[in-house]
Length: 289
Image (tube, rainbow, N blue to C red; front, top):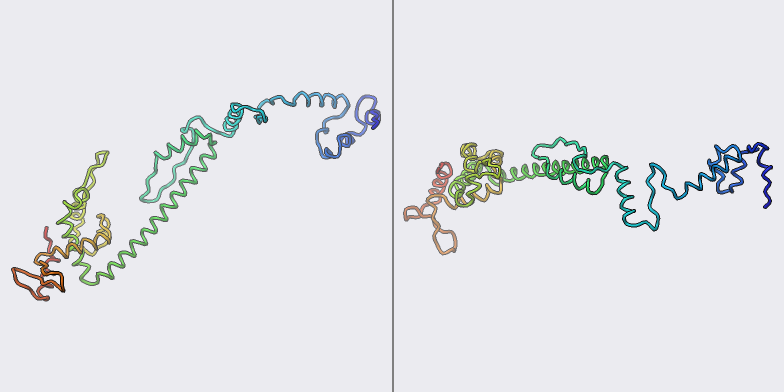
């Protein structure tokens, strides 16, 4: 195609119709803004020269993506540059994490936070992203703790209600006292650490079940399930030791060959059911300590 420059430029080199330059660039550049500041032919030549020179050169303050022939070292340097530009840190101590308010019974894990800090730093996680990720994790942990605590509270209430149904009336006095007597008889041998207490690694002394039950005066309020639980005894443990206590009651000696109901003997003589009930009541209401 013949091209006549005079059709586009004045004698001084300025463009007769600057907008027409876009048509010369072709329809694919119809919306380009490249020529907005190009007012004459000399500036167009300069623009072309500068653009050509810039191709392939590293621009100042610009992180250039490695080409297809880049080495592993080039790619690693590129990733490191990107991470630094996005806010990566050299040490986990540089991250700024806010400590959340924790619900009752939940302790903050400082060791875990330290490990997370170093893990994030090693991975090059930017400061703002690290903060968001870790705070989201903490909030999730808190929500899980609350959900578990609520479920546990519901389960405790259900267990307590069931025990009261299973031990109606005076049973809520007799059976817990039987459990108490069995614990006192067997605790030192069956679970000595729990019964007597122990020392933690930091030297602090943990009070044993014997001392806790005595301090709670549990014999005087055997039906107070909350008090039992504060001492560390739940309903399942109460049930178990009430059965053991029943079997250990003084004066109850089981004889026989296993066929039918074995007689209850006291002093070599079988006693009646009424007498058995009387012995049981005395045993249940007596602190054998």
